[in-house]
Structures are given as structure tokens and as C-alpha cells.
Length: 137
Image 1 (cartoon, rainbow, N blue to C red):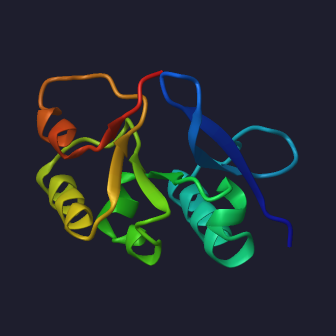
Image 2: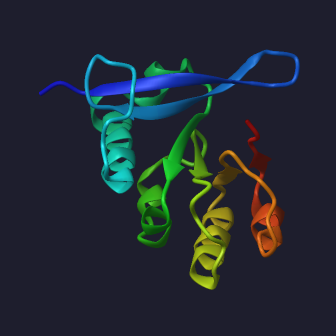
């Protein structure tokens, strides 16, 4: 079975690589063809744990992994080592009570939270207060 994971560098303002975002790929083409975002993120998580190891994928830098609302609510992050992974909350996730509670639980367990492609909208303030990192495009 072949497994494909792309890694995209994340730079600080001095253009130093500080982490890598790990992304699902369905083949050798460098694109996301899947229609199921939950499955795509679960595949990246599984590959990071069972196939490659996060340190080999990132050279010891943090691995940002995309999380959908469903993955946040079902506790998928808790199989990951908090010292190696940043839970990246997709821009499609709305900050309802369940999502905020899941984020609080992650924070209590020492996970870092990042907001992906973030644009501030009314009602998102509680999520920004929980986030350690806000990524802008």
C-alpha cells in the first residue's frame, strides 16, 4: 500500500522554517483530490504515527495537522503527541459550544491550537482567545 503525505513549510516573519503542515495526497500529483476532509486528516495522522513518524517528516519541527469539526469533537488529537503536533483548526469550523469545549480540553492537555487561513468574523473571538497561532494567507 502506498501512502502519500505532502509537507509544506511554515515560515516565521524572518522567513525561517519553524514547522511543517502535513497534508494528505492521494498520489504522486501534488494536489488534494479527496472529497472527505475527515478521511484525509485521519490518513495523515495514521501515516505520521504508523508509517513515517512525525520526526522523520518534519526534521523534529512541529507538525501542523488539519482538523475538521468532527475530528475535534471525537478527540482524534489525543492519539498524537502534544509536543510534536499542532492542532490546526480548519477555517470551515465554526466556534460553537461543542467546538470551544473540545478546544479547551486540548489546551488542558498541552496541545497547541492554530487557526488555518483565518479571517476574523463576528462570533469567532472566543476561538481566537484559545488559539496559540493564527495563520493568515
